[in-house]
Length: 561
View 1: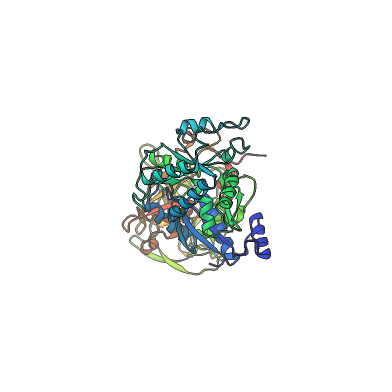
View 2 (view 1 turned 90 degrees about the vertical axis):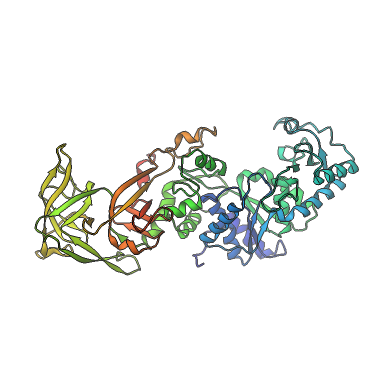
């Protein structure tokens, strides 16, 4: 994959210094460690670009490691979806690993910690452990089982592993400091009993490591140099460092935190995204309104646009919200330079050219790309006596500066002729149903031989040859920039935008698109960027999803300074 020089950031500077000084005594090694309990989203894309990008730039390696330590929520379908999304984004991992590959090693570390006095088996229930942890201003209360002998702890731990006890009967805890200012260090849990079948290992295990126990040690096992994670894991760095050193690893990996992506009008919590799916606010994980990679792909966003967006927003130490306009700008700029232009009328109004020969259809040549795009190509579009134009391109009583079609005014049909509206036809309710116009046969291509100037140019589709299609107009999923600002999990669904999807039946598109495969992207001239839907589109009735508008519609809702 060829990319421009990556934007500099504090993590890149740290890695460059590591390479220059040989700090770790081994090449750069990063990893992307998703839990296979859901689909990747735009926030994951930022992490993917960072981890894989650093490995590529500095000649190192990046592993894909599935953090599969919770048998209740994980599934192979998510593994497959994550693989697909990473490859679609343009990256390939050095090795595919699983935290579950290391369960034997983690158990060996657990026994070693017990023998060294660094861990003990606690038989308190979950509520008691939580209550005895203390507060940020008060130290915790030691467990009554904290003083168990090494022999008793080893016996209980081995019986936990053998499956003798029910869920919740015992846990293995690190023995650190119940008065530590970082509450995570107050004897954190390492292993718990879970009698559940693992999606890879079946019933081989009934004790499972918690995140803090598995994560840092998995990094150490794989020889990772910098463990890159988001700021919510900053407090976990203490236990990360304690465990990898207690396990005896020399030159262990170092955790570095960066600000996660916070994009306006979006949420990236997998738990909350799952609620949107389960409660029917969206049609699924790949709904084009979702910030998942699958949803963005179905909406027509390209991997190049996502990578450019990730590079544009950069990597920072402090949280900052990113405007939706920044993301849409990256998408719009990318599509502008790569997709063909075609014509589609979303809200059709019929135009009858009364002086055009009945039954005649001629073919007009139309370019796929404007002059400022380094691509070439053209197609033939049919022109006939009856046409469809956009309903909003005609006003019977127009305001000033409306340069489209009005009674008695001449406009240019894109690639076609100059036409003039002569008569407005209405139904019994006074609704406009069609326009009678005349065309100037000397103006084929849109220019008048006598040099007269026409201000307005509108798009159109032949009524005789146009194709019926469905157009889905997607908008932001939420009505407020930060739907999680209230802090209450129930609040965010109240901000779901009821107009985030408008389905338009009976739109008309030029027939040149019929031979194109699904997922073909276009600019519908004067309308927006669209993609042919991969799921619902058929040759008989194509379906098009709007990727992004032509102009920055977010400027309308942007707060004024």
